Image (tube, rainbow, N blue to C red):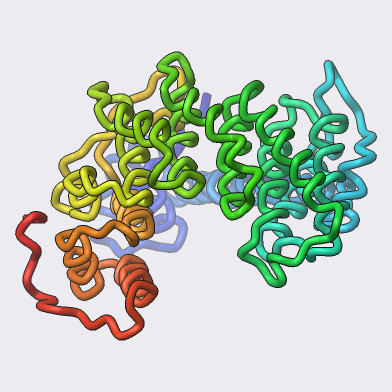
Length: 390
């Protein structure tokens, strides 16, 4: 096996090939003498280095680009929403043990992503909701399987978003909408209860889009059971705890009890479950979680925390400190979740973050939350850090 050249070898070979200064040649005289005549030795390695460093990588890159271009052409490129949904209903393609292979697999992914992207951005027009919802249910139940990666994940989120009231003409529904929503809810609950963990999470999180719909309260018992069940995958429990905040009411005693129990979990691996449950309790204006919320709004405290990374290597999860991006995400999610928590210290902390956090995203999120609470909100004592957050 040929050794790859070190950077110093590249520099030396280039100098010899191009007629280096005498001082450089002298410095390398030992090497040149051991190899033979200087001019002969310099020219041959230069050609080899060019091939190694430039031509071979260029051929590899060109081949990779060509293959991806060919797959893209075979897959048909990025489809329209209507094309994507139609193709998902009529998948075709090669299958091995119920798993689609070849370019068809890439196309299925692109189609599912196209459908989800469109629905997640703009929702569905009231007149189309029933049709699109039933089409998505048909694809989920009869045209997909758990072996298709993120295909079901995308479609489950889209199914929930179809019924989100926070979209243009959101409250205007066709007469058949109530029955269609019931079918959608039953489908989401079915996938929330079985199958791949990623699909269970997606189905549970999709329920949050129905938070203004009366039917969604039927999901509360199943979500409570998942939060309480220590045998459930921790990510499934976390998803259930997260959506109980927007779905429940402050007087739902069983929900409050289940979330409070989750906040008392002392297993370090379940720290994110504790946080998720606390955020839901904050959304339900349960003031007892104020200390946890203040911790989640404090970068100094977050920098001390280590969380279990279950995604990089699921078979060998390890603890790691929170990155700056992770801290920003936690700060923003916490501000949104704690917007309705009537605790003065929390509100003061929001003002401090609005004026002082180093991240423009965090400052903008704090400003938006405060503006929604009070359109005339002004930053008070922006340079004075709240005492609880020191």
